[in-house]
Length: 165
Image (spheres, rainbow, N blue to C red):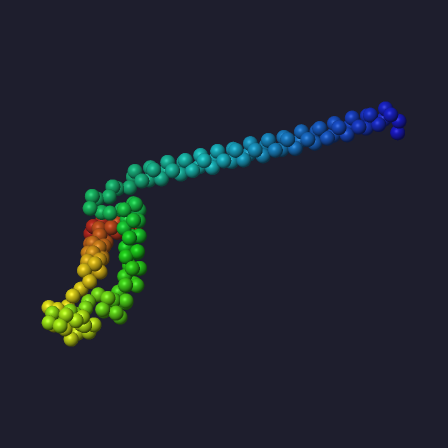
């Protein structure tokens, strides 16, 4: 191959390399455009869905003032608190039943001694641990409020007071 043929061959190879490079760049740009268009289309679809949901929520009847919506933050926090209190009760109540000395003890006035056996003591001399007693009383009150709130919670099945009660 002479010198002139080599130059033409090299020039031809460089032209092929440039065309291939341009083709790759074009494909990359096309792919980016496709991805961005796809993202825009997805965002548009999401916006349309939100608008449709908004119109559906507008057509739904408003809740009565006395019903509690279970999808609100208050209900989530309340249910979480009730769950924590139930777990607490699962551990504490059996402990108190098995070891009643933790909760109640008998104190005799004449001798000043403390008796573990509460059943042999007169009712007037039984002492209770005040902190635990007040905590258990507070739990009972919270559970009672939970029962009352269940009568006015709106769920999927119960949307009116007549259906709930």
